[in-house]
Length: 255
Image 1 (cartoon, one colour):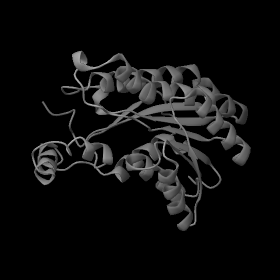
Image 2 (cartoon, one colour):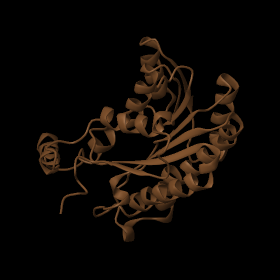
Image 3 (cartoon, one colour):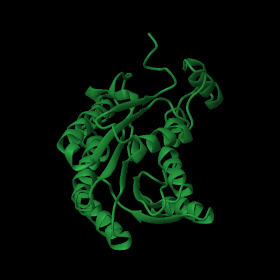
């Protein structure tokens, strides 16, 4: 499979898993559109791709904004003329127990994590239909299956992504659009780092505990999730749609 001249949109592309996904597609020859709230961050990743001989465009957007999403899709089609792969990866992850959470906080998580996926999928599917097909990969989380204290909104949003992806897969299965979900476990990203930075326990001790608690003996790396995303997106994987791929080092398998 060659990704030469394929056009891939990656949301949350300024760091962590999104950055790893974008770099991987860029190395493989795809035109990568990086979407993030902070333009400087996605510009930095686009520059990395360019320095490696790849092609990338950076676009600032609020992924929960209908107008911003429409602008990103329109600009992508104007520049490249097609959209082959949509990777919905952007997310926020506040840790607030349900009774301590305001409606604004709840809505912020749901719109950033779940509504954004709806907006981008709804926006790219007409272009994919017009060109004869495409692939959607939505990055959810193991929190879609099992969760922890303080993650009610996050878990709800991530479970919603998995359910919506299955429905999208069925809606367009006969029109050559595949949609699959990837559920990462604990991965060494800025999001994971932020979850421990305000704790009294030293970061090194917390990260050692994270590593030791994984059945595989360590947390994952963003590049490992990028490999699963690329597998889900690849036309070589043409019989898979509506699937939920768990990449968690054995976390969910453990009692």
